[in-house]
Image 1 (cartoon, one colour):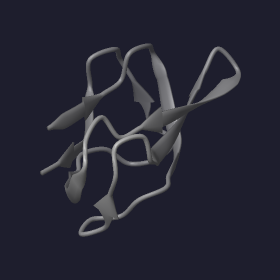
Image 2 (tube, rainbow, N blue to C red; image 1 turned 180 degrees about the horizontal axis):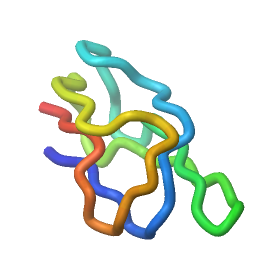
Image 3 (spheres, one colour; image 1 turned 90 degrees about the horizontal axis):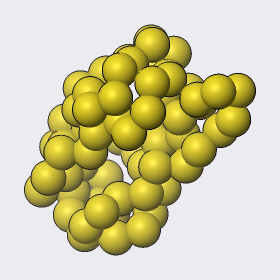
Image 4 (cartoon, rainbow, N blue to C red; image 1 turned 90 degrees about the vertical axis):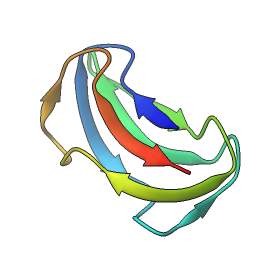
Length: 69
């Protein structure tokens, strides 16, 4: 399952790394948008298989940042 950004901004920190096991609701990243930090929760249980973006890069809404299987 792909995790996508909902608003323009940048991921300032990834809380999980590739091969980490996550549960639904675990915080996988923190995104900064409009000078506010917003946690991004995992939408499902699984394992992080890919991180598609780097931290501190400006992203548009709908950009895939992470894949969990």
